[in-house]
Length: 455
Image (cartoon, rainbow, N blue to C red; front, side, top):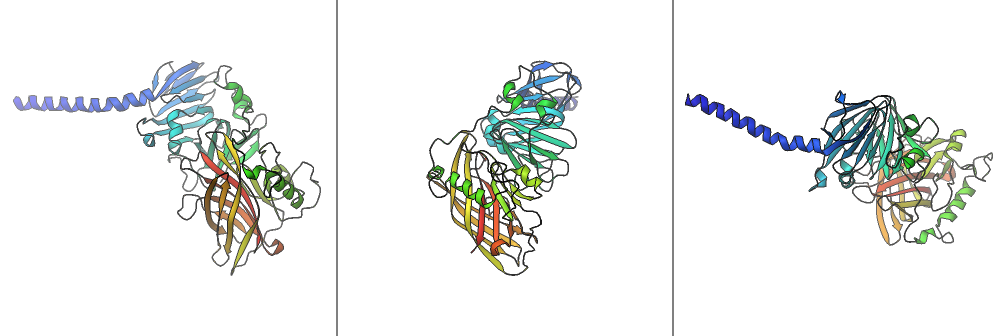
């Protein structure tokens, strides 16, 4: 009898310990996300949503034609799911003592949702992921709105920035954190009137001009009482903030100044823009490059749409700059030998996404070397912005038609991503766009474009 009693007591103790151990995890998951507002038909795990109820990790959310639901997170973040949508809170684990342990993963299966990063996410951006059926979205400290169905995802940014990549290769739906590298594309709130779109099976998202019927806010408009709804609805309140300190490279009268560079580009590529540069003139260069986004109060000098209409091929774009190659000018590169290049021209900007500051930069000590026998290239330079200097290196492959693909910034020998092209114009001409993190979490970035001539 004693033995039976001891067995029962032992089992009771084990059950009690198991329950007590489960309580903190359960309470944590439930306390991490709560329902703050509900309108219309909204279900969580198949049951009607209730205001102030806690939502556990793994919860599924489904809204009807009139359904809106607002979630408040433990770190003062916000998730809004709009009508005719289905979403899931995969993980929401916040570690205030050690932000590196924070893990947040959200999923929009269909419809429209808005995500506003909380304080914990801002401190651990590398551990945030927002999935759709076709794309992985990471943040730069951010407020963004997403539309998706099973084939297409479109994203606009209200504040901060995002990085978007399709699912392929090393970027899988099961992964955590942002997918970055040459297959990813970024979008920031300062890029007014544009959105990122990616289709199923597409390698890289496209930057598109916003149009009625395309933006998430036109597909499922925000309620009038949605926080920041006026900004979200038109995505036009974000303003371009000039640098706090004037960089010498901003002076248009100095060598390498922004205005001087724009003028030189206009002379070299008369067909690269729709503003006063003779759009019907013949192309004079095989490589057409410039800045497609307004910067420091100066209008863009590069019209991507016009290049598409001309039949030119995109060879690289980033948040500010683009490179196209004129129609039917591909070069069958040699299979032996090598070629060295000297930097002829460049533009670059350093971006602080926390302070919303942009600073012009210049490049020094630049080198580019192509090894045709190995079909590879190496490159590097110093980025100078004010009193700061950053040394960047890149490497990658050269295709048989001269396209340059740079390895991303996670390999030991490189710290920047590169896309570009080389042609046989003038005995050898090359250009590439680049981008790189200047700190670990990517809140400071550098973007640029380079133009090279054979040495």
